[in-house]
Length: 566
Image (cartoon, rainbow, N blue to C red; front, side, top):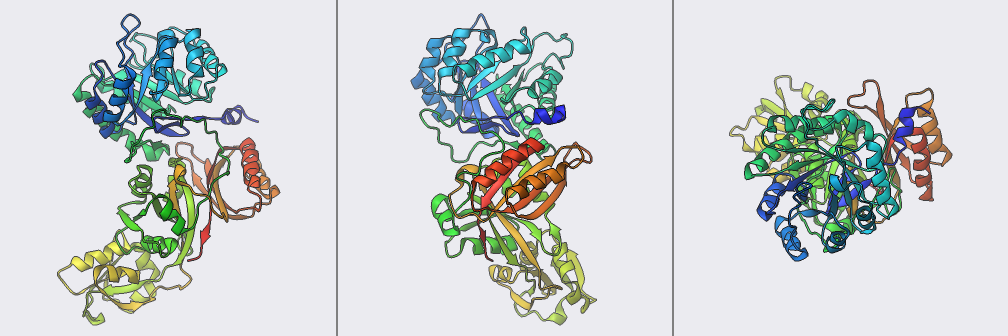
């Protein structure tokens, strides 16, 4: 086994702190505020994209006065963020462990064994900063003391150094290469803390982004002034640009933020995740259990909306139209809706590659269900319009292509590509002329008060699209499960993919689909997505995933779910 593959077997933890996930391929943005601690600054930082607040620990000779627990609770509630509190003595651990989202051990107390032991026994995440004057081995030893004391939710914090001339340090801030090398040796998430905006604000963004590209699980940014919040927001926008090429998810502040008195959600979730309690109920049970707002790409009347209506049956649900598939995933992630529905594959046009890539990018999104519907195209126009009046026909390029035989009967019609089939219907509804038509599902005509001139104009009646219902991991509901989806990347050695598939076959898993996608930044390396029928025993899925993790890399279960008839 290659050294690279051995390192990939180190289980990477996911730590949940104050409602925010750290690790597991995510990017987490945290802000650190100085004393006197301001709820207005925390609230503004949350609006800018921060998912955790952090009280500054000062310097070795100047530790600030911390708010008492009651004041901390007020700060947390008004700032609407979980708060990480610095501690420098065991008594503070006991004082704050019941109210803080996490505890921070400053770098100058990195080797304080009494403090480490006390923090390790607290039932909250612990953030351990590295002393710039210490070695990586000493830092890891301190982490092991925390673990030995009982800490199972640990985040390493790679702090900037002050010596701008230190060899190998970018801009006097962070040794990115050293931090990246250390990440391959540990199972805990790691935050990079490049400092604050100010004299180096032009470089801080570059350092933070460079650390994320190198593999850091998040950034901890110091905010000194109100202007810094705007600079932090610009940094968040830059990180959003990196999301898709890095295939990583930026953790967003939840829309409905409620923090328990004691944050007990800190867990180490290791990949691959077991299938226990995965899967969802029927459409009616889903809507009743967790809400009735569903996002999809396109305008009202889109085929995705049709799939949504059929999935949820008679249960009334509200739709949230989105401009792109990416926006659907983000809407679910940010809890602007409970569910999303996206196409995965068309029987004629093939797979929707963009959505497969989104599953790699968003580890907090799971497949919750599947439905297949027939795509039946209709020619739609304004009421009273006759075929001989039409001069232009609007539709998505695939809609035009799939109705080419019908359109050939009218060679004088101009075929105008549009971003969305239902959107093209909306467009002609707003048009001031009556010589326009659109190709879309007949349901779109009802939405916009138009008429269907011809139905079933597609070239091939065996035109079906398979849709996936997606949701956040914590919104899953137990139900009968018929299919499982997973992803992995095969190691670069002869027969690796064959061995991976054989492992699944040995567990009695019937392969239904396999899809390969190139991995960004790794030319000629591929990630595989597979669907299998659910076995009679759910444990077979768990055992298959565990076996697969020994042969493949980046193994992840995307969901175990029911398949509903269209």
